[in-house]
Image (tube, rainbow, N blue to C red; front, side, top):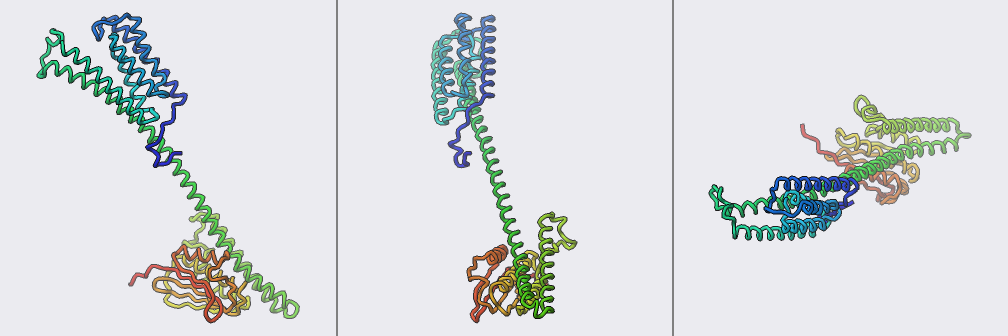
Length: 429
């Protein structure tokens, strides 16, 4: 497909079978018209030059003038030159009719402008023929008006000199004739170019829409994978720790083992509920999946972060939870991202850090929301530039809202995850 910047070098595609059939029909119609006009002119004796060759020769001229039109779209420059030469030769021979030859010449010139593959050749060939035609017309006028028939202007009654009026009339008619053929041919070519341009741009638009659709699918898959990772990894980690604790004390302390297994059961149910809610959101449309208040039951927020702390405590981790500042409404998307950051940070702490203590701090700032998770582990949550799927997911979630994420070891030991989400400044009452 052509690029938009290449339109000036565009070449019109050659004619197909339909165009060839149309050219055959038109050529036959021009021939039939030329023959008919020749017969009528001879029957009337109204020859344009006063005299004319035999009827048979005139019919031959009519056929020869129209025949090249059969190839007017495939070889437009050659056809135009041939018809121009035959046209002038017919005028020199003083054939009886000028209407049919003029029609053939007009069609040939128009076809060169509309179908000429090389625009420079099409332009200069037409200009050269027009100059030659006007030279021949001027020569004829000079001969005719230089020695006019004494009776030619007996009926002249206008305000202009008859010779001047005749010259202006001849020039005006020919300017209109050749100008119309030139302009209409160019407009036809330009119209074809614009139609092709619309086709190309339509195809580019369809490709762009397809690319956008594919990108949207990929982005949605990434979001689903991130949500599934956050839900599954956290709860499975908690269940793994509790199951290991229950296995160790199953014989020595059945009560503790039972409590641990109960925690595993509770965590499993919570995970199943979140997964079911997440899948329900993915399968249902917005109208059916929303609750009465417009939120999804599967979409946790800031008010459920304390539950994460409770779940982490049952693994034996000492977790403290605190909020600072004056709470204010937070967009659901920001609340969900904050919840997932806390969830992923606690999951990494439980699985990898070997920590005994963790702190969750939520700060409601005037122009933002800050979430901070600290532990006293050995940094198992990852390196400062983390490469794990969990850290990548946290960075993506924070970046979506234009926030900042800091992940790394603390000065006094342990590990810290801090996420800041910018919010619009509240309007004063």
